[in-house]
Image (cartoon, rainbow, N blue to C red; front, side):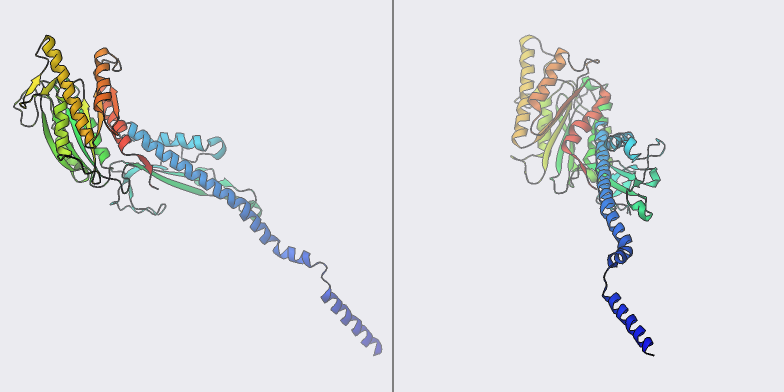
Length: 423
């Protein structure tokens, strides 16, 4: 009995000693917490890599979208090459050899580059972006680009440590949408398109009208309330279309442009005689359309003139209001007449600039492939660029009639309505 009591006492002492003994506790705790520690380390190491890669994808999507819109504007608002441009810039930013195809490279499948229309009034819900303002198709004014490191593209992001917890790869995507113009809070534009309808423009007038329609198209992306008026000029000038909001009158403006013709008749219902180029009269009429007062209300709208012509002025308006055609005169009288015509146009441009009106110039030189470098075209080109273009206006010249549309988009639209990200 005594032995049993002694044995029980020894066991009790050993149990108390074991309870107080902390040796091996760390091993037990490490065994319990090791998976959690591995998970936290994986989260810290790999998630920082995921976030860095996500940022790279976002920058790449933004660059590709901006480049696609920019190229479309340089191409006369034609966006047919947007997919190739986006792919090119995406592969430059994230090389295929390192990242795989962040955009689908199959030319038959360009679903990661979407052409569409961005409007505040659109209602096309997109669960991927959360916006409903971008609608695929329609009048193209925006490009949406989605970049991916994912199994869908065959290039999921490979994780370094997460594989230890059976998580070897991660799918990430990024989306960007770019457009031009429509800057929130910007002043609306009031533009007068001043179109030359002189006889020398007869063969190219259809190309000029395509350029005029490109202006209408790009002004759809101008700030809300932007307006367009049209002046036509030859020997005299006429206010062909009063200023109307472009957003509500696109179709009627395009039909009005279709009605522009070149005529030698002085009795045409809507067109002036084309027997002369009275640029001064055209500018003065345009000013009267968009800013008839002494000054333009600088806080209400941005007044702009876009002049499309093919040469130096050959006519002016005398003190009685009659048109004077210079080319039917000779000798000193002819030279004096031409100088007067140029001076009147320059004075009209200065008066417009004094009111705060920007003047853009598109010059068609009809130079038979000499790039506007013949002596007569060099004089006319330099005169329009240096004497007529004013304020924030830009100038461009071309010997190719088919390029006028591109010049309108690139010189006027791209300059006035900046390419920007909207998502």
